[in-house]
Image 1 (cartoon, helix red, strand yellow):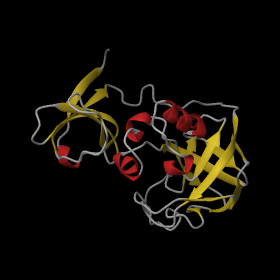
Image 2 (cartoon, helix red, strand yellow):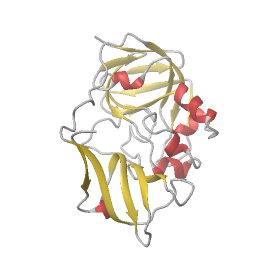
Image 3 (cartoon, one colour):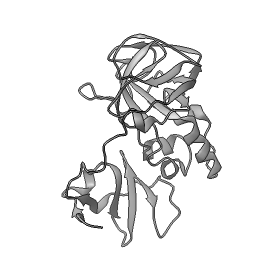
Length: 232
């Protein structure tokens, strides 16, 4: 592997990285693989990974490329069309998700009645992008169950569960869900926070399959059964 190397992290105790990195926990001599924001353990050679350890880090390393953008461009030109299988909202951060058959999207904010539409979500950022709407593939949740980690779709804590479309193909693209135009910002990676609210194995099982974060570009309705399709 060329143009790759381990880069030390200057402040490991506050480090957050939406990908895998090596971390050395305080009072431990064993390096573990961390992932997500906030980070959780996805592999510890001395223990079963459960994502629930919150020990402070004494050191951390990231594997970096000479050109970090190389090979990370999202796919273009997808013609796939999916459907909405489930719509879920939570009024408060960490609050219970409730399933609804229809939802009203508000431009620049999210789904009416959801914690992120009110700016009250765990990761809400008034100056950030990609916090309006979250989606996840039904197929990814089924694959997680096939690995022995049962997760009811609403427990994924994403606003929309969709089927038949590769969400990675929508990163950096406009797409439509029902009446609503959206823009795919980045992957909605799993994190230790999601695993705490669900069960062990979710973090490791959903690495790079946690879904999509998107902006809402126009107001309108979304219903179960609506089409999800990329726009030219």
